[in-house]
Length: 181
Image 1: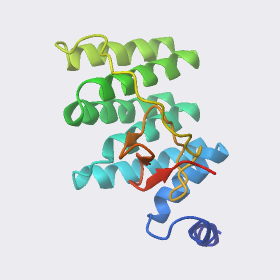
Image 2 (image 1 turned 30 degrees about the vertical axis):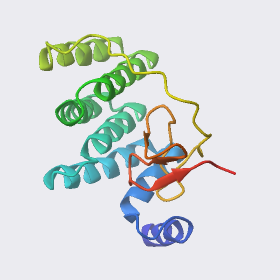
Image 3 (image 1 turned 45 degrees about the horizontal axis):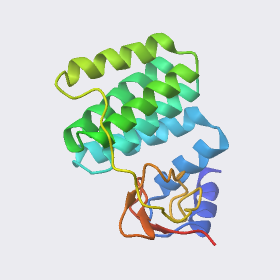
């Protein structure tokens, strides 16, 4: 069954993207968060072992999937690891934005104690980092598709890296994403 599933995904998405990433994004979007958590954890561990640039995003997504699946205690270590890696690689606004999103999502799910735990952990981890970073107001950007055409990951226009005025980079697979028609 799983092989057939992967073959069907390969036919619909980019052939250069790892099938495991495609499957993880697919099952996350279907709401199968427990399975997505497992898959993103595998991706995160592999990326972490090789010092991959996408390890933080995979850890964060693994943690989010676990939280969405009701497995909060399994998700918190992944969230912390993703934020830790992000603070080392992208201190400043990118880190603060991700941390704020994690805390907001936990609070919106009624997980106030866990949100407070993450917030306290961040303050312990980075006591000298300012509370609020400001980012210059971005220029008007084109509308992006809701999902990456290559790996199927959700695209958040306020969180992508822009390569030029019309092209953004997928945080999960690095594929260029352009305005949807």
